[in-house]
Length: 473
Image (cartoon, rainbow, N blue to C red; front, side):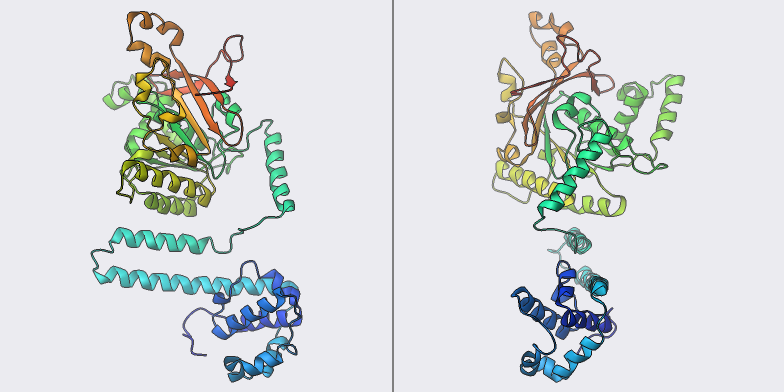
C-alpha cells in the first residue's frame, strides 16, 4: 500500500466503516458531515469512500454486488483482490449505529498525521534561515494551521429550521430565566443593555468618540463588568465572560490600574503617584486579592496586525475559552495595505468583523472620530464622523458614540461655562446603528477622577429617562 507505517493509522477501522456502508448505505449519512476521503490513511480506502459517497448521493444502492464492475475496472482495487476485497470489508463491518464511532477514529488519526506534518514543516522552515519568511510569519502560519485543525468537523453550512428554532428558544428561555431581555454579554449598564440587549456573538461593535470623551474608560468598564461576573471557584455564571483586551495604546499595568482605582474609588493618577491614604491602600490590596482570578486577559503589544490579533485570540480561546474581545483602538492596528489610509482602515474593520464571526464572540473595537465634530455647534457625533473609512459603518453591526457635553462647556465661553452645573457628571452613549434593534441614546453618569461610567441614579424619574429611542446622530 506504500504507506508510512510509523504514521498513526487504523486500517481495520477504515475497512469496518466501508464494510458497514456497503452493507447498509444509511451508515454513510452518519459520517458524511465530518469525514472526508483525505482522512483515510489508505489512499485506496479514501478513493473507495469518495466513489461510494457519490453513488449514494445519486440515489443508487451500493453493495459488493453492485460494485463488482467497478472493482474489476479499477486498477488499484483490482491489485488488492477486486470483488474479493469488497466482500472481505463487508464481512468485517460493524453495526450501522457504530459507524459514526469508526468515522471519528479515522478522523482523529488523520488529525494526528496532520499535526506531525505541520510540526515537520515548521521545523524545516525554522531551519531554513529564509530572511523573507520571518519567524513571526512562521508562528502565524502555524497558529492558523493548528486553529483550522482544531475547528475541523465543527458544524457549519446550512442549518435546518428545527435546529435554528431550538437555538432561538434556548436563548429566549435563558434570557427569561434571568428575568431580563439580554441575549448577549452584559455591558453592566442597564441603560445601554436596554437598547442593545447586551453585546451579541459574532458582532462587530464600534465604540467611537473624540479624545477625552471616555471611550477607553467605557470599554474598560464593560470589559471589567463582563469578566467580573465570572467566579473561578463556582464555575462560569450565566453572565460571566472570558475577555481578551488588546490594548494597543496603554500598557497592561495602566489598564489594570484603571480597573483597581475604579473599584477602590480613587483616581488612577493618585495610585500611580503613591498618594493613597493608609485606608485606601488597604482597600486596594483587598480589591486586588478579590480580582486576582478574574478572567480578563490584556495584550499590550502595539501596532498588531489583524492576523496577529486573530492568532492570539485563537490561542486564548483554545487555552482559556473566550466570550468577548476588546480592541483599543482600531486605527492603531497595522494593515498590510499601502495604498492610502482609507484602504488600510477598511482592511482592519473587515478583518475584525471576520474575526468576530470566526470566533463567534462580540468584538468591541474603539475608533477615533474626525475633527469635523469640533467645527459644529452641536458636537454630538454622527456616523459621517467616523474617521478614515466609510467601511467601518458598513462592517459594524453596532456603532455607538460616547459624548460628554461637560467637556466642551468647560472649554467654551463664559455663557457656556455657566451651564456646567446642569451637564456635570452626565454622559451620553448614542446608538447610531443597531442591526438587532432600535437606535437611541443611553443616559449615564461619568466620574472623571475614577473614569467610571454608571447608570444615572435619577434615571426613570420625570425629565431624566434611562434611555431614549430614535435618531442618535
